Length: 442
Length: 103
Ligand code: FES
Image: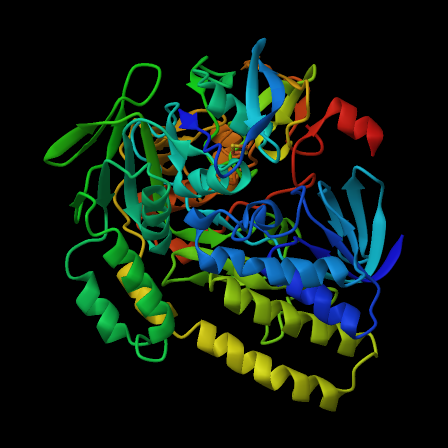
């Protein structure tokens, strides 16, 4: 099957791009691993929009999903992209066989930043995003004593949602260090971003009855066979479920595997693909939009998806340069408005670079500890790509999605160099591990 | 451990988790069914045999690799439940998994 534009990911950026590109007459393919459109933020919104605990912002995603469904794009849900040849536009997809596209838009979103604390591999320890997915896809809430530990807007959203569902967390351990609020106001953006700021304050007000410990350090999960206790410097509490969150980072797995140029994002302490104002990457056929190009939230993702679709139409001769400029202007304004609060949020919730203790497993798949990574760095491993051959970190099933950034950070610390001087782990195809059966089906 | 909220999403799909019948809402993943069943683990690691449960639920961590309807190494958080689906704990197996080409 041959298309003008292939979009990888049916979250806000991918859906908005598909609607815009279809309106301009492009033949559009949308590939997504989930069974239904929405991405993570609007995950399962068609099934769950009536669940009041999720909130009005969530149900607002239904409109976008409905226009995407009506757009006439060829939609392949439950489909994995194993390989993309950017030079030819050929994609290996299962199930359902390959496809080819003149332009490819990666809209693969974000993942939660891994939180390598002692005991984070114990059953019962999960990401806060995972708990939200349980809520959205199954209407389910963690039972027993639930502790939320970490920081970021999602922490307060989840706390409010659990409280509305009558399953409030028994304790919130916020890791934001003291003095950050003043720094955030100094960073600016709060006035032009006040709409979003007010929403955040609303969540804080809604959850003000919940017990909170602030400026928590030294977090660790403890227990025999599963988490039973969470401890921190100066305290501990029994718990049945520990939910961690230190913000989200772009899902750079495919962009890095394609060899796209990346830049270090100092504010968010992560790599992001280099893109221009319309999402075009360093490869002539490939664009990146949404959180995958830098964390900005769903409203910015919608605008960036539409901009990338306009750019695709222009490059394929369906939109004049004037038409592009005219249509892009209001979208760029919308995106700037959606991003206005970013400097404030980035300063408030800047990742806390606490040293990872030697015994902590940083690679969950191959069970490699921080101490082993330090030893490899002392033996000459310059970055995660070398550590992988020394230790197998990044060679397991997740292909480095969970350990790559931590390994790079530990090596940078050990070598005494800046994080941006350590090349990120370069993943290779297939983008997800294949079983023998799947390989036979390709 | 997780509990459903029948008022929001009734549990209507019966699956087998390690041989035990569990009712879960339609739209839940196989990994969610394991969490709802209250299982102690969905897999044991290949290196040390440590128990694991799903961590990310969005296809990133691969801690949900399980046996689904007899197929090993299935990313259970990416598979929606179907009536009668058999989900079983995976013990260490990784032989059939090829994380990268050329291995
Ligand atoms: S729970 Fe992380 S990949 Fe399934």
